Image 1: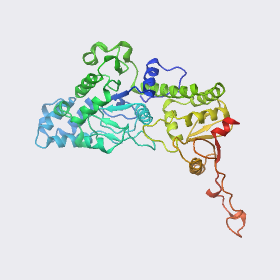
Image 2: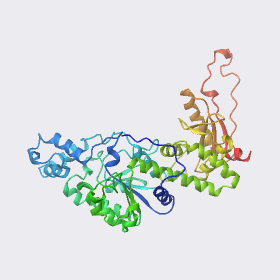
Image 3: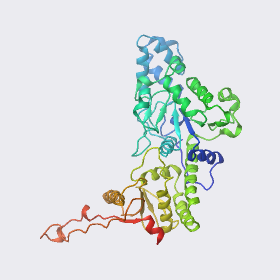
Image 4: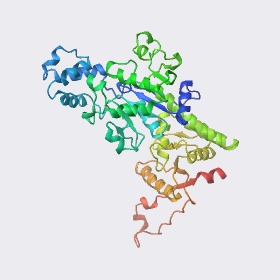
Amino acid sequence: MQHSPSSIPVNVPPYAVALAARAVSASKLVIYAGAGISVSAPTSLPSGAGLAKALHTQLKDVFDVLGGVEEWDLLGVADAVAQLPGGEDALRQTSARSANFRSATPGYAHRVLAHLMLEGAIDVLTTNWDSCIERSCGEEQLPTVTNEHDLADVTPPWVLKVHGCASRPGTLLVTTDHLATPPKWVQEQTHARLGSAVVVFIGIGDVAPYVRQRIVEAIDEVGSIDNLRVVSPSISTDWESSQWKSVAPDLREEDKIGVSADQFMEDLGAAYIITRIAEHRLSAGTSLAAKLDDAKNGLFKSDALTVLQWSRTVDINPRAGESVLKSSEFGKALIALGHLVGASAELKHSRVFDTSHGPVEILVATQTVPTRRLVEVAEARLHGHVSRGEPSPLFLVAGGVGPIPKPEALPQSIMGDADDADIVDGPLALVPNVRHADEVIAS
């Protein structure tokens, strides 16, 4: 069943608050994601057993050796094919095409993971071959690391794919031997990411044989069992029969989080947003804090993913790994919004708030740029709204150096002696209504 999110609640689960506090501090928070985040709708990729069956079906008529292998046994199928001359390459190429790994629709958990990475709040390791996390970033990009060369060529944050990626079949770890002797960079990066970190396993409700060694290695790297969390709806109820009991026998009851991966990521995203906005409230005076609360109450009518996605679009030049929600410009813009429209704002489509004062769109510059750059972005977005038949919003901006430039006056007639009635109003007449947060707050 596809996840149905709710608006950001007043209270989120304590585990989410505690983990969000780590995400906004110097402490490390790592999400270790398994196949479970990609099995549910709308992604609907196969489980390990489903992948084994797909491989078995495609290869059984080509390789007689599969006649004696159970179709659900992924390692059995992989080992049988790989031991044939040229079988290893055939196995990897077929595996990469055995499911919709490169174009499956990302789910809620994928998208929250991606946006928290863009915020610099978490590191992500995954045993999955699909590209759903890195395709969940909207207009931004998240690189992936699938081999040692990527480490030198890309800049963090990145998605660390410890079992390879279907877009590069040669990187896939499929057989028992592959999994037992992973590339050295996998071991080094796992050590670097997990040492002294709090690590949350999601999408790994049970430890299947093909991921067991990575999980055991990860637990060893974490060091303290107190820094381990396992997310699965049945982690407590099925503990006695779970493989988790054998790999993490001392896991505390409070660290067994009995929700789905989607719900966990929604809770974590909401707690992160609440924590960031609370930081702005602490730095504001009493009267400004009340205005911030008004804007927050309107913003929280949306769910966590919607707010995370929106927050990345308000920055005119966001940088992956740097938080927009943390920026003072973002806090100032929210205070100005509350000052202007109270709690009437509700985030709708195309980055715009519906408010009692009409549509409002927020833009911030978290880098030092001339204020005219904010106006230029407002002009470009205004053209987009008009082309889609949407009303023109007020642009509420924060950041930038210098006053807001006055729009240049248009000539009285742009067609010389032509009849003004024959002139079709067009882009030249589109001048955005821009107000700076500083001016709104001071008014």
